[in-house]
Amino acid sequence: MATTTTTTTNTTTTTTTTTAAKRQRCTFKDCKDAAQRIVGDCGFCSGQFCGKHRLLEDHKCAGLEDCKKESHDANADKLIAERTTVIKGI
Image: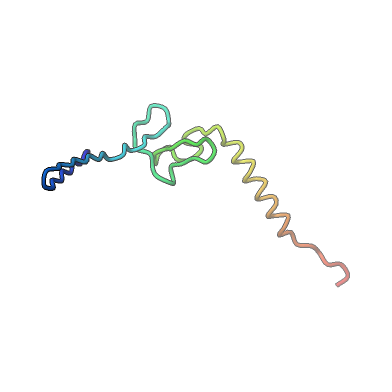
């Protein structure tokens, strides 16, 4: 989609043409759908995906194992920090 604006002043004619930016396509193989902004961006493989492929499992992300390990470590640290201790002698 192109927009053309023509401005004429006295003897000078200026023509400005602007084109709309192309929409990003899903980077999953054989998918032609438009990639979703923000929620379609994968932080592990730097791909841009549509609504069907935005989840790590759906686009078979190479960083899936790293993601699982980071989540496991974060949850383990949180559980250790929230661990209750028994007070003896009460």
